Length: 546
Ligand SMILES: O=C(O)CCC(=O)C(=O)O
Ligand SMILES: [Fe+2]
Image (cartoon, rainbow, N blue to C red; front, side, top):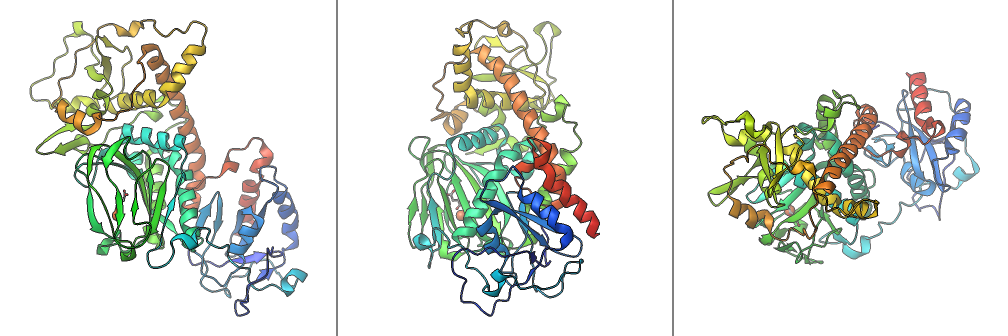
């Protein structure tokens, strides 16, 4: 529902909270709701899925469409009503507001007369909500430290995505997982955990820096800063090709001191002058040279962040590019098709982590430090032999098994990335799996699973195990007892988790594609048919206005 250069005209009566701004020069156009929309308007505002203090505001944009805004009445009205303000397109919890440069050219196609309602007689333009954090950090160095912004569970889920999918980063000693990388490696469904986080962050940045509905996400990525990683003094828009960046949001997903050493973020001037990362905290700042900053070298462990850049330039919006990727990769799967969730590795060199003239494959390292190794998928009697000219790393793209100590798990994984994803899922869910086992009547958990027969041969891969330990092995926080039965349960839980995300993705994608924006809309998942009502009506109205 994003649109650019289109006009907003509000239909209906403005909702004003508090005194109107002394701003007579700002004319606001409010049209009466055309008769034919009354019924729709009433029924939409009775939708059961909204909280009592939420309403729907209908806005016409061009002669061809209507937008439905969902939100708290006063908030929506404050943002929607100042039609003379230039507002960029945006999606907000399934709602959208569309940019207009002038108010005069677009009138609804239905004949509406400009009627002054009692509320309008005194109405000019209500004040925008005050940026909640403005006092704390605005000024010469606009920045804010938002504590506890992300929940523990969100941090853990994003960590799972990163440790299962990350590839070598754009700088030395860095591993990264960008959203296009997920889409390109058959993991488009793993974008879903990011969606509400992106939206909340964009709202927080727009609110903190008083630019409602102004921003697009330019980049979203998970980044591991490993031993040796650092960045010197810079601003985030300091290259000609980065000038579109207006704001940065860095979310910390693990803890300085506990998970790694070093990696303090420092600002050259202003307050706060340095940020010691704590899981769940977020720092937001303008990307320009009012916020020159650096990150101290990480000396041990793995510093994990989710970094977003925001832009005002719709041409740099990440969503349309991502959607074009997703429509090519994810739409080709049927939701019931099991293969839909099997990751498809990128080229092998993207998983090569180089360090001081040595290195390792990131997929291998991630399973090794958790006590696993890759085995061929063949039984020993099949005499599986790797020909001398084959690059052994290529075997990670082929079916394989997972081994641990003296056992090999029975299941054949489609490739190394698939196996890695299940291993990471097991460690993410280990406490839950152990609790389930303890609750089940038979579950002492000590039973030796038949999977532990010896099968296949261990893949001999050219990896520097010592280096793997140094880079990923410290602070691995694995104090859980490994149980094969739990691991087997993790395989089916991983399938359920992935299929559920895939199902959601396929449900969301048509809406995302038609609006060229990625957003959360809980109403797409109706509890019952009534809740889906708005969308149905919107579609009917769109065709009506065509
Ligand atoms: O991770 C951080 O704390 C800041 C990262 C940063 O400065 C950057 O990626 O440009
Ligand atoms: Fe930076």
